[in-house]
Image (cartoon, rainbow, N blue to C red; front, side, top):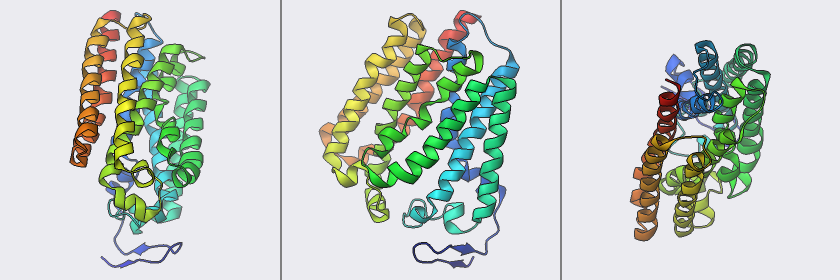
Amino acid sequence: MTTVSATYGVPVVSTERATWRDYFQMTKPTITLLVVVTVFPGILLASPGQIPHMTLILASLIGTWLASSSAAVFNHLVDAEIDRHMVRTRKRPVASGRIITRNAVLFASILGITSFAVLAVYTTWLAAVISVAANAFYVLFYTMYLKRRTVQNIVIGGAAGAVGPLIGWASVEHAVGWPAWVLFLVIFLWTPPHFWALALKYKDDYAAAGIPMMPVVRGEDVTRRQMFWYTLSLIPVVASLTVFGAAGWVYLVGAMAFTLYFVWMAWKLMRTGDSKLAMPLFHYSCLYLFGVFGALMLDRLLVAL
């Protein structure tokens, strides 16, 4: 492979042909899967005691998957120059030049338009509008503005990735109920410790790219303390669904077990000051959402069946 790597603002051109894997990589499949997993509980909470039609469920999941994928591809486009300055991301398809800007824009646009159409036709207009608003917030406000200008970038920007339950509820109803907002808050509070764990490991990368992530600006000690407090704040939020009657004990026991272990990992990271524990916490944080939302799905399915 021959790569023409250039200075800031000059495109990078690669002679290596793009493959389907490059396009798939641009959709950030792991993050997209996490977003999609959070949709189904929102659907179930909006349909107490019953399971909605499979067409609605599939349309909600597919529409959200397409919307999240579209946002991820636009993120690759906007962040291409930053990605070239980071060891972790410099081989991404757009940053490396394997996929040219025109093709990436076309791919992202097709994904976004298809997402809106699927949600609007097979669920509700509200679900479609929420997905578009989340994408605009993520790409225009977080990626293009917050990420480069404030240490609170991932805290505020995390709202975009927390809309899965809102889309799920809105796909059933033409409004969004308070349980969906509780799930939104769970993801919102989960996001900082999740991403800051990664930022602790790649602190030098973020510094080199000029991104004001918490470990770069405030230091590792402050970051570890902030991570602990965010995980601790999840306890009352997670419990509130059962306390106020939206979920049962199956959910509470399962979700609280996952949450307490998350808190314990963050506590251990803070107390020891050993940043080598950051990546195990990061990997567990991905499992955490599957655990909490999986417990909620099981709880609601047991009621419906």
